Length: 140
Image (cartoon, rainbow, N blue to C red; front, side):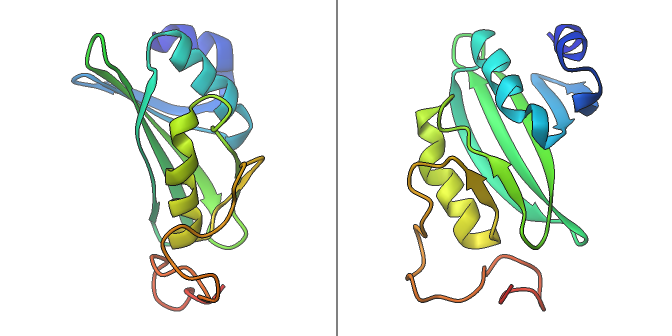
């Protein structure tokens, strides 16, 4: 599958490795939706997790897609800026992405373009900032 994805997405895949049953990819934001569609077509129909991590100078949004028939996983990581980060929503590919994307917005401030309901899900509407950003940036 990795070679097929490399052939289809070329430089859109920044790095890739196979570890056990995981295919781990770091990709550019511009190919995220099409890559997710290709993974879904290969049987990775369950978005088991969508989360983010503040790694200092940037955020990483991480998607774990699972093929229920085989137990295989594709882990997709996308780099976004810590302030004003935006990605296309995957809700058009995976309906189950709606609430996890809202949580990533709420906790980290990443906006998902095209999301059907882009409001906070855990915190009150008047909450300022994003509490899982590392210290000094919660109010951005």
